[in-house]
Image (tube, rainbow over all chains, first blue to last red; front, side):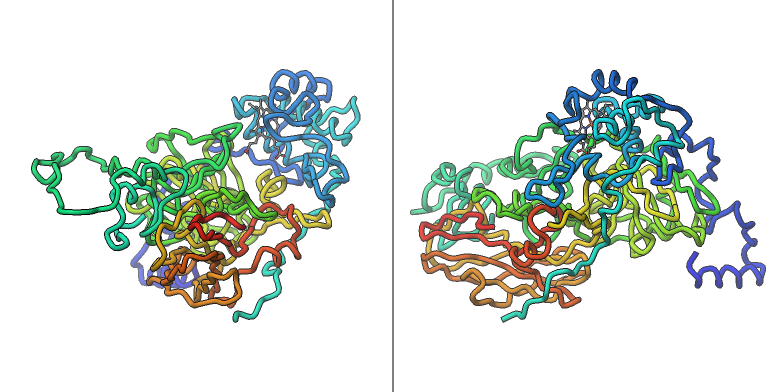
Length: 185
Length: 420
């Protein structure tokens, strides 16, 4: 609430002009329905870099390999080398070259983003159709294709956020305006 | 295109060609331009003057004249996935500063969802005192505001290494549009749910098949940001987020989440794919800039522009658009000699913050070669740079946020092409 509004409402409350809003129940205007976590669970799908939001479940590289071949490879290539859609693996050491290849392995700072994105948007033709176990499994496989987890790895809510991503510290903040000003003639 | 004709030498067909006075769109309508030939002799009263036209409400929701068929959005190249693609606004065909809603540029990542507004819900939760679920009727009850703002995709104008000589302004700059947006201030909704002091970033998420998601820092969220349900007076078009979208003024378009279904307040950015893998700007040293939100000052001449053909020597009005994500445009300089000399263009009022500004400058084409450029200056004193200045700092692989000065090359034949 803006301070002016808070002061005004306080004043009105003192004067008995508005009923004091019981904190936590009614908003300023009292519009809408207070939501319980159960109400919104189906929408509340985000996964943060520290792993907050990761669901229970687990999936292995081996399970992921099978699933990837069946549901992802047609667009991304059987080894994630790309096809009609984005390259998912490789590109290591290319970021500072003339032809950078940005992939989950070479560029993405967090493994959790992979879970979050696949869970919300993939497979392209049937988004939000995979179970948590399946998303862990394909994520494990894509990370394996990038050499970031061993072939016998199984990932879950504890282990996924701990996968060390090579480009974790590759991001900087916005320095713009970054171009020296020119004199207008 | 223009109603003005140069000395009565333009026929109706030339008007159709999507070109300004005295010029025709080169390839697409060159043949059509010959349709009627120069106007000579006595006028004939046409058929439409001798009969009744269509009755009222035909159709109830009006559409452009059938003679405007050539005007439309189109992708630069045929997309591999038409639902994960973009189309540009035909800036060469438009006047003033408002983009007709049906011509607003598109960028979708999972197509345009067909949302029933009765069933649509907006959830606001996270670090708030009262998590809320709102229906569209609830949202319509909140105090509302209207704002004239541009939206620009940060991928607009991919000219880091120059583009194709064939590109029109639709292809170089079409991922910008400008509308009057009406809705509820995000700050009003945050007051309603009671933002907790630890709240620093807000995840905004769409109801499309991409569940498009971006983290919005609190300062951007509180800088007049709108939860909009209307555009140019009518409810949002489906391509623009019907029934509800975020509109963040001056900020890269991707963050103005369409089909908005959820706002979650957190104490840190959520690190979504769209703010890590994409929409980050790769520098020559291999690091990438993250959270590069503002769209810096930029301008482009829309007429004459790529694909146009100057027909006659003589008077032309140079017309274009300028904008800045940091505020108002204070000046636009125009050069017809590739930046050797500049003249100050006239700015059409109103000149609004984070809105398109129309500029104009009279010009006489003597029939020789010319290099047309425009340079925007905003209220912070920022001067639109040339491409080389950007490349010197950012290299050629940063992909987003190109705002270099655009050059249109005019040949002695009158042909106009992209010289990047």
